[in-house]
Amino acid sequence: GAQQVRRLLPDSAWLFILPPSLDALKARLHARGQDEEDTIDFRMSAARDEMSHWDEADYLIINDQFDAALEALQALVRSLRLRTGQQQSALQGLIEDLLT
Image (cartoon, rainbow, N blue to C red; front, side, top):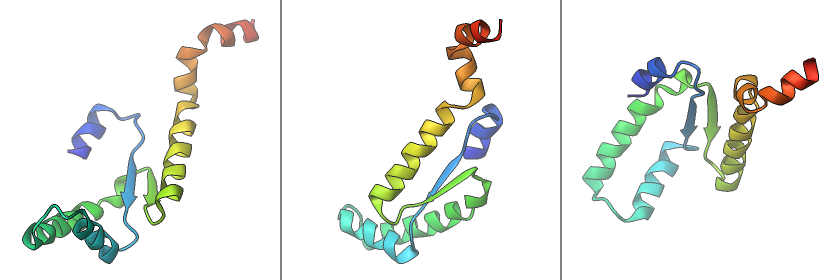
């Protein structure tokens, strides 16, 4: 799925968020209290497969401490909004005024 989206949006930035460990991921799934053990086992297997694609991302965040991971995500979003391509359309008039 992500690879198809990447083909359609080649200039987009890709972020992968990893858990700090498989044990932490499993504990989080258990703490939700929503799934039976066999469902959790299935989800863990799927997660391992998905995590094997981490190196296809442009950015990587480890979700060990929620506040730190959130701060990293917010910093990434802010920086992406400052890309010249993003700024060019929003600030075209200003840029033209500054350069003429």
